[in-house]
Length: 117
Image 1 (tube, rainbow, N blue to C red):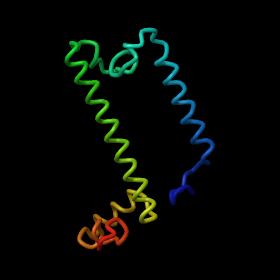
Image 2: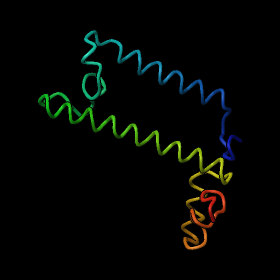
Image 3: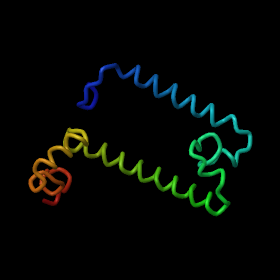
Image 4: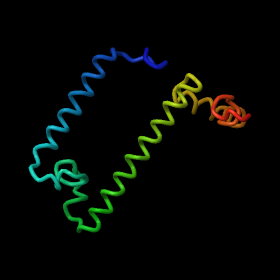
C-alpha cells in the first residue's frame, strides 16, 4: 500500500517499468539529429501528423498549447499532492465523498484547506 492505495505489485517494479518506458521514449526522441526537430510536436512523437502539414505559425501555436497543457498538468498534480497531505485521502476518494454530499464535503467544510474558517 502506497499513499493509501493498494497495488497488485511492488513499488520497485512500478518504478522499473516507468524507468524503462521513459528511457525508451527519450532514446527514441534522441535519434533525431536536428535539435530544432526534437521540439514537440513533430518528429517521431507526432503519431497523428499534426506537425507535418502545419505551417510555421500553426506549429508555434501547437508548441505553445503543449507547453501550457504541461504546465496545467503540473499545477494540478501539485493540487493532488497538497490535497493528499491535507486530508489523507486520494483525489478519487475525495471526489466520491463530494459527489455523495456536495454541500457538506467541499473545500469550505473540510477544516484544513481554508484555515480562516
